[in-house]
Image (cartoon, rainbow, N blue to C red; front, top):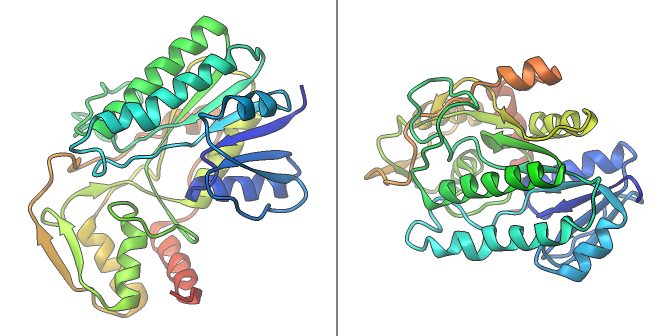
Length: 307
């Protein structure tokens, strides 16, 4: 077994940023993604496919001792009326991957879950990892189910497992995706001068984390010794409302943002901030990029893009 890193769902925002960092640091990275993309140098290789490709998973697990599971095919909005999507596209593919992984003892699994969809509207804020999980969406319920299966798999097989529950990630190179990525969506509306639709009155509060800070957390988790069943929140540890993000965006860009407020959706958490004291005390991680600075960097990047 070599010391390679297998990355599932590597074509997404976090996967691309993490692969770029790991390969730059000299790690051998094997990225599995549906849409092929150029490698990030000689340490990075791209493998077309997905987590359901058993033959590919077996081949790559012989080369890797660490697995980053970033694959997720839904959002709270996309599965709101079709709960079966969570089973079809997220739960079942992961369980089939575990069927394969159990034949490869000694591997370590790092699963990126969700810090914004699991706790519902928490009774304690900031919400610690020990807070009851009370999903308001099928997407959140799917994450809870996946965590439960993975934690059980870890206990039964002795597989080293770490679960990361990130807050709302943003930053340069985040793709524009309907119903996902508030900062990216808002800044796109600024750039194009179009009207943005906001669900609710804009007072919904989220914890926003710059992408490089999340990548650093992933790297520090990987560098720690084996752990069975560790769960870490990863966030800024403070909250901002959509209206506050709008005000900051207008300040940074010097442009007004036209918005239309729509009725609140049942699947949307109204207030969530993460307690990140556990990862701070155990791994020494803390976010380094303040929100206003991160927004300014993201805006500079977006202005450099053709569309």
